[in-house]
Every structure is written in C-alpha cells, then in structure tokens.
Length: 355
Image 1: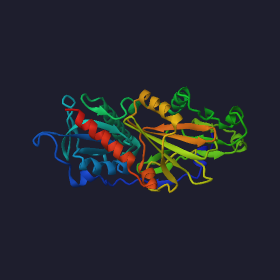
Image 2: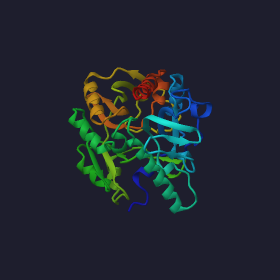
Image 3: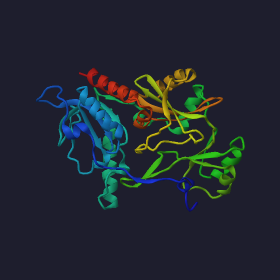
Image 4: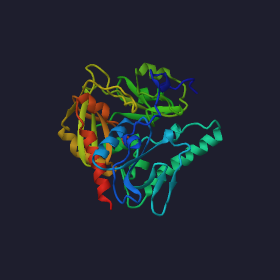
C-alpha cells in the first residue's frame, strides 16, 4: 500500500472547527408560537456548531416568528434528550419541541466529542447518528431534502444522472490504482484526483483535514504505481472560464459565478471556511441548464442543494451536487442575501403548512 494517499499529499489544510454555539435563538430565546402551555412547534436542524448558515437562519427565522431547535453533533455527548416516539415531541433542557420540519445537515458521528475510551466512543457516536436518522421518519413533519438526506445519490450516480439529463460530465474512473487511469481516460491533459466521500476527514473530533481535489500531470499519476489504501475518483481536468454554483431552493434556482482570473475552479469548497470569494457575482441561470437542473432536483427530491458546474467555451460541465451546502461565502462575495432569504422562506412555509 502507498505510504501516503495521493489526497494526503495535496496541500491540504488542518483546522479546528469551533464547537461554540452562535445560535441566536439558543442564546437569546425563541419567538412565541402555538399553545403557551404545550410543546413549541418549530424547525429542527441537525448540524454542528460551526455551521454559519444555520447561525444566520436562526436569526432570520426568529424575525419571521418561526422557532428553531438546533442539535449539534459536536455538542451532543451527554445532552439530556427525550423523544416521545408516539407523539413526536423532542424534549431537551431547552424545553419541549414539536418538529414541523427537520433538516439534517452536518450532524456526524466523527464530530461527537471523545470520552477517552474507544469502545465507549464508538457506542456514543453510533447511537447519536442512529437517532438523528430516525428523526427523519417522523409523521406529520416535513423533511428537508426528503429521502435524499439519507440516500443522496453518490458522486457516480450524480454524474450518471447529469449525463442522462443532457449535461456534459468529465471522463471519470474510480480506482484504488490511479496510475491505470492515466491511460484509460482519453486525452493527454492533466487529471484530478478526488475523494469519493466528503472533502474533509475528522480523525479527532473538531480537528479537520481538508481533502482538496488534487490536479496532477499524467506523468505524476503514472508514477504512482502502488495501490491506494482506498479507492479514489480520477477525472479529466477540464479547463474553464469560471465555476458555477447553482442553488436549488424549493424549486427556485439561484446562480453564482466565481473564480479569480487564471485560477483553477475544478475543486470543492471547504464547508466551514470563513474565507470569502472576492471574485463572485450572482448571475442568471444559463438557459440550457435551467430545465436539466430543475429535473434533477425533482428526481433527487432536493429542497435545498447546490449544483457545482464549470463554465467552458463548449458549455457547462457538471461536477457534483451538495445536499448539505454552504452559501454565505457566495452571498457575501456578491453582496446579496438571495439564498438565505429563499431558504428562510422555505422553512417558514414548511413550518406553517403543518397544523
């Protein structure tokens, strides 16, 4: 096996994800709703403390009179929680809550704090992850992204779906021996090595290492003769003029174009980065993309998601769709709040639709 995986050889970044909550409603209180003597109806978001998008939504929903209960996986260990399965009421130290919408975002077992014992750690993480998925099966409750939350199409299925919808995709192989891809992927240009899963790993709760897609020459890839310890995705490198990120929110499409002149754009985003892209503008959705992306969002039951594509002289190229997506970086770079407004409106609609 390789001493170091190719993705670990990229200039990745190690960073710490804060576990301090900046949730507005959790700190300052929720707006009144429903029977003052009964459980509070509202939106439940399962994520982690570093989710800045949910920080912003907490404030926006408070203004709209929509209570939100946030459960962060990196603050979950030891949380006093009771869930009455029959009536669906979730009870914590913050009170009794009646979920009308549930959204699973960045809630993960890897971020649950350690208890100092491997066996106990595994137990705690498995239990929390199992519960978070069970909550999505509640009756009389809207699940954001529906079945896609637990069974989102993987990256290979996404490529197949995009191709059927008429969008060009990069030539792609999945292999534990990347050197073979250099001769099997057509052309003689560079290749991009990507993770099959998330664009980061969390070997210690709160300590993240980004797994940035890595652009490599074919000669470099051929020279990596040994097998990887796990399979990776290898794609043709696609030269582009800019990167498109198209947000699908409740049937609406909102597009941004980004990328500094001359910079590579065939790379994923760090979901917990504070950096702003200063070369981003909101743009109209290209005419040829609107219908295919709307079709994919319906087929994959996506209420909120981000499609990543490349803009090339020969038309757009599909990369992937992210169901737990960030958007503040694009909004702040472009000086707009269109995605936040749309997501808050969707959650408010779901909250008020169930009585």
